[in-house]
Image (tube, rainbow, N blue to C red):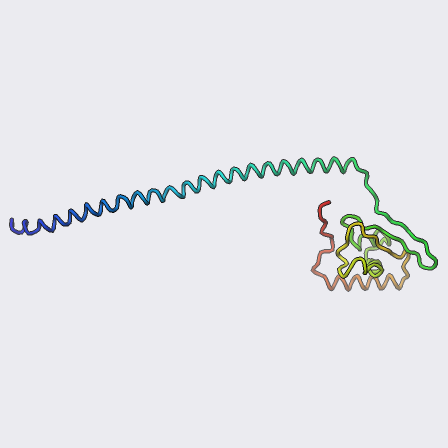
Length: 182
């Protein structure tokens, strides 16, 4: 039995050396893994700091916006409301008038003001196609449009037919204007 033990001694010695070498090799690897574990923690902490800073900036922006809203409200409250300019030009035969496009006006809104019927807008569009362009939904503030002061029954019927045709052609398009901020 002693001989067998003696024969095993080199194997046991090599195994011990292997285990010690593995222990030495894994210690730096473990230290490296520990360092790598710290990186996400640092990243999370940095992200929290950035988030808190962003929240502070957002709060400052909200305060500025509220302040601007209050200033605008005070300015609007002190400013009298101006009615749109409607000027009539009497002419022999057919009478014409002019109206200046205000902020957020539409042809159907102008038609409602002028004719008390929003469906007569194509009559105004036909007279001003060169100014308005190909898209009757887009008007420029300050533009002066010409309109007939009175429409014949035939002109009214034709305007309604055109309004319906435009509505069918652009049925998915919103009728209310996309008003930019003043």
